Each structure stands twice: as structure tokens, then as C-alpha cells.
Image (tube, rainbow, N blue to C red; front, side, top):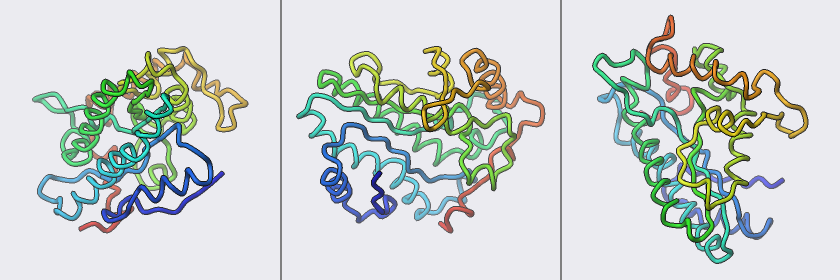
Length: 250
């Protein structure tokens, strides 16, 4: 295992140096997963230019430049897998009436950057499909149970999915036939249910029976109802604004 400290939020940082260090230690990069992100939910007028630049840097420029750094090598070798981690917040809210949720009313920047990520991912997939390179996005169905969200947000427990389902879905996209599974705007539970694929622990040994394919539809129905504001108690407080917790970006 190799860990390379690098600030992807620094606009002046050269991601080519990061790629070079990784390739020097491990060899050519065959799989790239862009998982760094910033955001939060707050009203349109509360966003400062500095805050917006930071979100754009992590949600757009960092993945864009990392892909640009590894793509020539993938093309030369004739294979590669790129996964850009997105969010259900990329989906535009429908209305009126609009759902009374944070992504609906205050998702301008975070949801907007993730929508941009989805769109350019799909076109890049179409561009490089003849090079046998898969390019997809992957998002949690509602919320992944990261340490920060679990500790600081007020998301109801039934809207979380474990990190293992995201890892299992990412494994699917990182090993799939690039000529058949590319250009997907994928959601973790939907993908696992579609493929009838069980979820294993992070060691890949023991199956998570509570997240078996047969149990996913009920969970997805509840998450979709929440996104539409139809779940009892659904509202804008369901997803906390974590920007002040993670970074003082005003």
C-alpha cells in the first residue's frame, strides 16, 4: 500500500507530480478513482467566490486534470478504467412543488458541479471507447456512511448505505469490460441490484447479508421517496451543511 500526501484543493499544485510518484512506485496506472470532493448545501447568495472556486477545484478541476494526466498512458496500453465519484445531488429537482430537501433547494453549487462531472464523464466515455477505456461515474444511492457524515449530519440511519456497497460497485466498474460498461451514470445499489451482485466486506471475504441483492429494492424505494420529500419527516434538515465543519471557506 502506498499513500502519497497531496492537496488536490490547491489550484497551483501539479497533479502530474502525484501521478509520477505513484507510477514510479507502483508502475503504470490502470485504474483511476476520483473521490475527493467539497460542497455542502447553503442558499445561493451565501456562496462566496472563494468558496465556489474551492468546490470547482475539487469537484471538477482535480478529476479533470488527473484524467488528463493518466489518459495518454491508458491509450498507449489500450486499456484503463476511470471512475468519477458523483452524487444524487446532480439530479435536478422537479417541480413545482419542489421536494423540501437540501439538495433540491440549496444544491446549486454542489449539485451543479456533480452534474457537470456526470456530463463530461459520459462524453469522455464515448470518445475513448475504441481505446478499450471505461469511464463511468458512481454515486451512493442516497448517502454513504462516512465517518464525518455519521458523526455530524442528521441524516436518518435508513438513508445510509455502508462503505462496502460503494466499494463493491466500484469494483464492478473497475473490472468490467470497457466496451460494454462505460458511460454509465451509476448508482451503487441500482448497479448491484441490476447485476444481482452480493456485497462483501472490505476484505472481500464475508458477504453482507443485510445488503444482499434481494433486499436492495426496499431500501432504494425508501431513499427515492426521501429524495422526493415523500418520506415521513423528510425535509431540508436531513442533510446537514457540512461546509463549516470541514472547512472555513467564507
